[in-house]
Length: 210
Image (tube, rainbow, N blue to C red; front, top):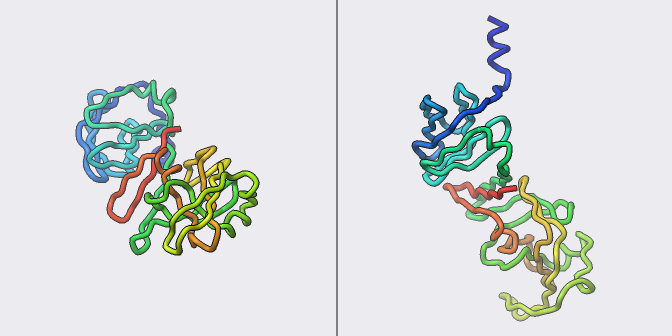
C-alpha cells in the first residue's frame, strides 16, 4: 500500500497524445485526451497527466509536462507540440476596495503598483524616481500634463524592465510627474497593452505569451 501511494504522488510524464477542448466553463473544462473524455476542475489532473490551471467561457489553460498552453473551444493539439510552444507568464491581482494593487519591480527594484487603465504609461512621482535611481531630468523628454492640481511638468522616460507576477517586459515607456502625485506608481497602458487582461469577480488576471 505504501508503495502504491508513493507512486501515485510521482509526477506523470505525458507521452504523445491529442488533446481536444469540448467544453469551457468558469473553473471547469471538458477535454478529450485521445479517445478518453474528462471533466476537470481547476487544479485537477486527468489520468493522462493533463492539468487544468484556469478556465472560463473563452479559454482553458492546460499544463502538460510542466508547460502551459491556452486552448479555445474546439481547439485540438498534440502534446508533442507543447514543448515547442511558448509558455504563459501571468500575474493574479486581487481587488482591494475596488482598486487593484500589486507588488512588482522596476529596473529590478521592488515597488508597489496601482493598476490604472486611464494612465497612458507607467507613471510615478519624483520621489519614486529618485528612489529608483532614475535621472529623469537627464534622460527624459520634458512635457506637461493636466492633473487635478493643475498643469505639471512631466518627463517621458524608458524603463529597462517592469515586472508583475512572473510577467517581465523590457524597454517600457514611463513618465515622471513632478510633485508628490501620484501617491502610488501607476501600472498604465504602456505595460497593460502588451498583456492580456481578464477580470473574474474580484480577480484581475494578466497573461502574456513568452
